[in-house]
Length: 418
Image (cartoon, rainbow, N blue to C red):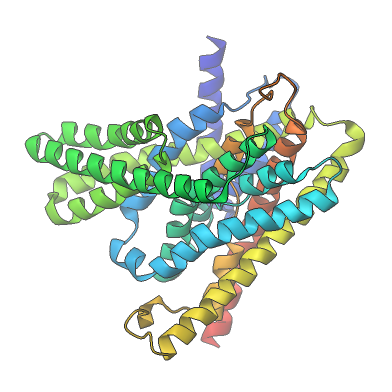
């Protein structure tokens, strides 16, 4: 009974804080994080440690599906070059960059452990990007790039993480085998998402006169698709995204307006609750992990986290600006047919895309999913330290970049108009 009461209290707090954020003009995720941290330090608050399986199954599939459903497929295809560059190339660059910094900065961080930390923190978060940029009046191309990158890069980060953990546990790393496995994981996820989207479209046509059944099927299928993909050891993230893109296209072409309206209203409530809960729960994790770090090391590890946060932002900024230059060169050269003018973006957009690269729920889920013990029974090295640094980087990126992003967008908009 106490657990049910606690859940209801957290839900009520989440709704109240979300409403307050709108009144005082602070991004909802940021205020929820601060509230979660504050509540977590209250003596009467019981420990609520996140289960990574719950995050990956309960939160991730519907949030990714909804984001993919609402993204413009046409604009996604227009910016596929940039999205692919950031979702794959930048993820591996960030993994390597953070690994180098962690290895030479943090005592005891071997190369395999450094790459584990790098992989955990390599991907930006779709939920954070959407939650903070919502209502800022960003151009559609900027939103499409941010959401498209965040929808796809989770799969890259998860694959990099698996290989890094394997290295820690003593499994040999073979480049050609890792590349093949990576392609199988991504391709398999795409195939599962495509097949499930086709099956769902047939089911929706069969039940086309029963609106409640249609809406219920669309709610259920992201979870089923994710589980089917994970069962076959391919990317559940990619599968959920492909399902969302497929249903988005079907919705625009086939769904009556009545179903669109009812479905949209239903999903708006679900996404509001899930978004709010996950950011509040992230805040609640900080006091729990803080207890596992020696008191004399807390500030030191916070410093490490701050350096990694700045480094990750710097790597991202360099890669985004390089992509801007590469696109302009390709368009002006002999590749005009491959790069459309709509795919180009300016320096203002580059800075906003760079600053919007915040870490979030996937990084936390991966960190909490670290094995407690190695196969030989020994404790996983520096597990608590890696989790603490991950949470600190997530909080620093969400609070630092999240609080300043609205001001940056307004300032750049004024300069553009001037």
